[in-house]
Image 1: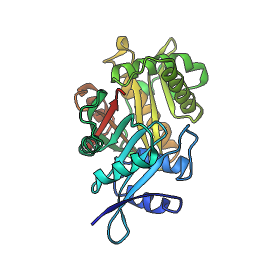
Image 2: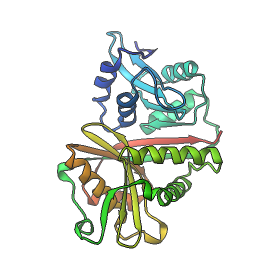
Image 3: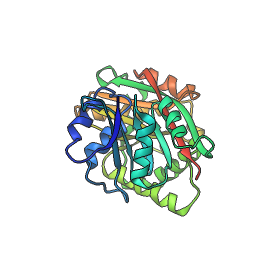
Length: 287
């Protein structure tokens, strides 16, 4: 028999041990724990953590209701009770659900949200790469095209691109509050060295970011190329450039996910060495 419980300070080692069993699908959970711990968060609202224990007291599932009001899951068992307990304890709305696709679908049902309107409901393919196997595109080796960490001088260009990216993805919120939150996240990413820009001597060509960072692994997200510059290899070039920087700094692995219908992105990632390792789910509610 398994049972859910609130996770508190002192449970960090158990969460870490559990997540290491699922290294490709728990990057958001691991990064949240590493950056904020269980005691609080610089986000406006701290995450609420729930675990599922077996009879021996071992964690067999973990989830968090994070500062962006998302449920982030890795719950192979005991999902429904854990989800309901987490939302009951957080007393906050649910803006979305992230995790293995089948679990995202089951969590939505457990919340009674099958009929809730959504802005995005996507099955994603999950990819992983050992950075020693990274294959660099030739264009990044040429002097005229560079992949580098973004600076605040790039802010306005990247903010426009990030807005367009979210609009294309389907998670776009056309409001001043959402725009301010988007800008804050981008500013934080630039300050932390997690946003990358591919450019030539004349213009920016593409962007990418690390949306979760651990000492041994980085998760790629926010890859965007303006429509007029697509199908020229710029997306894979900026991702490869970002990963090369991570490899220089001792990072050994990378993961990412992309929509199962986005075949060009999948081909681009495979060309630099990523291999499919599973699936992932993203649901964003329109509430």
